[in-house]
Figure 1 (cartoon, one colour):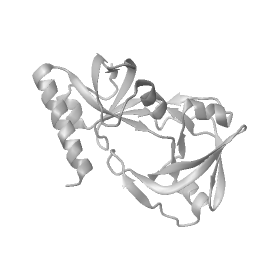
Figure 2 (cartoon, helix red, strand yellow):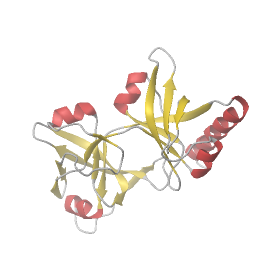
Figure 3 (cartoon, one colour):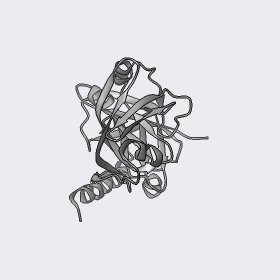
Figure 4 (cartoon, one colour):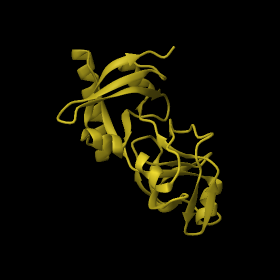
Length: 217
């Protein structure tokens, strides 16, 4: 068993036992750097016909990986290089950046849940084999909590619930209205971007407490 999988199982067991014994829900946090998901069509436009991504390391969510490939994102005012490509290819290209990145690129920062890209700003994506002009698809990702169906069940949470999650310590804060996304293809993890994680001094894998739940109607 790989170290990452073992750690995941240990964390899941700790979370489950803690809830059963104390009634307190904790979830592990993870900070995400800026990255891009490419459609199959845009992947070929940027890297060449028939190109396949080269997986570099697996991600926590089932079947997803960080690829060896990177691209550049260009906007009206600036450019950001070395943006990591995540795989596998998706139906639509989606760029996930920080608030500060939006100002550097010269585009409006729009916070959306992953996958909700209609009506968002666009940008140019530049790869080693060509470039793509995106009419939309650049977002600042909304923080969210991933859970498998089994994990959601033992934490008594449902898909679409909104939770408040607390970080203790010197930079204590509460992330409010965090949507729960559960079901097949999800694994327990609170997804923040690096700006949010740095605001609270949060480390990858750190357990944060769910302090409020707003049930999905």
